[in-house]
Length: 178
Image: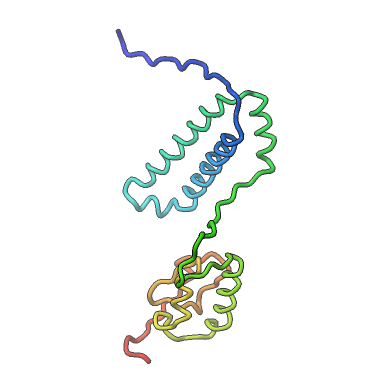
């Protein structure tokens, strides 16, 4: 008897509970974020052996899984979900820790952005010193979204915009400079 693919039996449509609804939205948000990451990081992913294939497979499998899950949801609830999704957004954020280690502090993202932007604007704008030896340079290395290569200066990096290698200005610091 030849191997034949069995046709999938029609999926039973059953009630969608509130916790399940949140999980469906989380899966859809995950799919959207994964597709976005695939687009944004394409160049990087293509440099890693197998990474482009892996992320493409994840996108495909997650999409098919969501479709199969939605096949189990009653039609009227699907229509309601579809109407509501136009007005929804999903946000991932750092949860506040229950206890904070003594050597750390929790600062809101907005406040940290303001502090780093002002520190960068007022201290780095005309500085020509070695950021690798500067306390502020090291702190900016830890807090800024952008990253700086070893011999780049924060004075040449715009902290409010995306920063690319073509924006970088190499600065050759002498190793023995004070």
